[in-house]
Image (cartoon, rainbow, N blue to C red; front, side):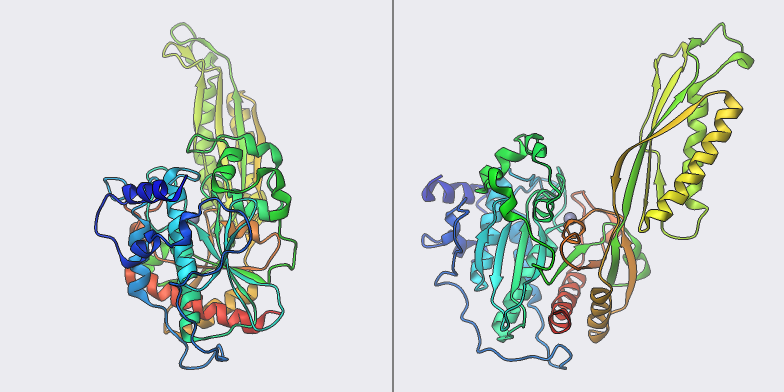
Amino acid sequence: MNRRRFSRAFLGALGGSALSPSILSALSASSPITRLGDGGPHQRPGSSALAEAPHTFTHPRSPDLPRINGPRLHEWLKDLSRFGRRPDGGVDRLAFSDADLQARAYVRSLMLEAALEVRMDEAGNLLARRPGRESLPPLMLGSHIDSVPAGGNYDGPLGTLGAIEVARTLAEAGVATRHPLEVVVFVNEEGGKTGSRIMAGEFRPEELELVAASGCTIREGILRLGGNPDALHRARREPRSVAGFLEIHVEQGGGLESEGIPIGVVEGIVGIRRWNATVRGEANHAGTTPMDQRKDALLAGAELVPVVNRAAASLPGSQVATVGRIQALPGAPNVIPGEVHLSVEIRDMSMEGIQEVFRRVRLGADAIESAHGTPIALEEFYESAAAPTDEGFRTWVEEAAEGLGLAHRRMPSGAGHDAQAVAQFAPVGMIFIPSVGGISHHPDEYSRPEDVEAGVNVLLRTLLLADAGLS
Ligand SMILES: [Zn+2]
């Protein structure tokens, strides 16, 4: 797409409403953001980028640490919400869609304005770098900007724009970190953590042919972003090539809000195991088979649902277990169900904890089996290992929150995040802020401006503590 056509598409996406100075500067003819899809060498900040203040050495525990610019961050969040906006205020910004491409161009313009050097890796991840004063591996921070269909405006954008705001605040204050900083926007988080899993070397080549939510294959999508699906190995990060990774995200649950705690110190991303449960009974005539002669697979399967619930609820801890799907066969009003399929999912921070819940499910299933004469098979079809965060990062997040007078508590993340894949090659830390009403993956997803600002100030301080503490 040439520059003129791109700018028109960009304007169209914004619906002609009042534009903030950031968007206007992004649209200026000299802006490098119109160079979509260049996976080439580093792109240096343009003339509109801020001039860095003279560098100082700021102690991470000094009383006069810089604070982020909250109003500016909110302006950026508002601007980003226009890409893929829905009439209900939510967003359709599926990975690889036009809205995703335009939003990435906007984010790139913010990176360049923040005096960061921008490049794209072969996976299509956007990477923006700020030099450090020592020769060390980079400290990485960031998140994603793609959304689920009918998603909200905080899941992803908070961590992405928060990271850019931190880098910009450091530049404006002239704070020179020991480690280089690398701000990252991961590709297709919502559709399977494509970008971060490619970095971790977890992505299998056959996944390139899977169809993404926006309708193209992952291969086509990566090409669309300007990446190179045939050279994904070059985007891989080896262990110890990144000093640490830090992500701020909305909680996506109601715990912090209901307790009035502004900062969640994430202990890790829970492990997940899923099983297909098959209950075998005998299909027979619903009118002529007496009640004492039935092997009703649905009756037995229905009893498994509370068994799964109690297996998790009866133990102390934050483990959860769910039957999310049930199907009775043959599925006719006048036939006793002969076979029933259910899904069983268990999540916990500890894989041993998951095993213990499953042991209780199996015991309960055995009891149902003998009571009804209906064998129950439980076949595992999915496993995702728990990804604990680094203890150093947890204590730095706590210290940062305390320095700002903010209450905090430790908690697991029940949802998956890019940090889970990054944990394969670097120590990771995560910060949660409250989601109002616990609503997420929905247009009503919302976090209060004061919580956003407090959280990103914690991100900034945690980064400085990690910069001093990590080798
Ligand atoms: Zn997210």
